Amino acid sequence: MCGNPNTRLLSRLIIDFLLLLAIYCVALVVLPQQLQTVQRGFHCSDDSLHYPYRQAWLTKIHLTIVVVALPAAFILVVEMLRAAFVPSSAELKQRFVFVGARIPSFISECYKIVGVYLFGLGLTLLVIRVTKYSTGRLRPYFFDVCQPKWSAEDDVEEEEEQQLLSCELLSPGNATSYIEDYKCTEFAASLELLSLVRHSFPSGFATSTSYAMFFLIYYAQARLFAPWLRLLRSTLQLACGAIALLVCLERISTNQNHISDAAAGVFLGATLASFVAVFVAHLFRQVRVKRRQWPRNEQIYGYAGYYNRATYGY
Image (cartoon, rainbow, N blue to C red):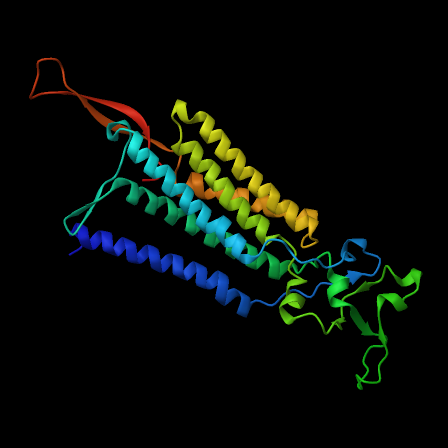
């Protein structure tokens, strides 16, 4: 049964789907419910936490378009163009046949690249979740949203009778004290916003967008290698880098993240994209491919030579 090509292909599809489903379930469902955010304190004199709260321009819908829809469309267009303009004898391709029907090469190419990309995106979400919950860094608008207060005395049984302090009541000499046990008293803020106020590092938008854009930069470098595509490739790569930069600037300008949060997000995203493109997708690995050259006036016997051709992970 395992020797049946249809069974092997179907098994591969099922395994790939279950693997991606498990990664995204852990990143999006299990970890947010099981992990506890580290309770990180603050100094009242910390000016980096006194920025006003502003509504972000980018939403999760925009992020989904940038990191899912845009890369999928980019890969689909590139593979369709290659299938239309690049001769089949000019590159190495792996062809699949399922239930007697030959699958077009550009569909199999898109499936493999998109699958690897989604696998790396799932790893990126895992890293973002674990890092945010384990660091608990406060966002720049912490004081505006939380308005923290804490008790003046320790070990007081009656919570109603204990005096609550705030940064406004502290003397300038005590403004540098480190406050770790506090409560947010801004009742107008939603529970979701109060939970997000301690998830600043790293910037999730910057990390996921940087991963997507850097992966597309590597992908364009590997697939659009023809000399006549050099200008188009450079333009697309520049556009991808500009998108990642604009997302970082938006997170900083709307006081959603610190500059160091956005910089760390770019570093994490670029690192994960490099790992996935080089070590998982093998976009730039080359193997020796056998090529048969027929001598003149010879129809039966041929000469077998070898040449290097990039496999692109296939």
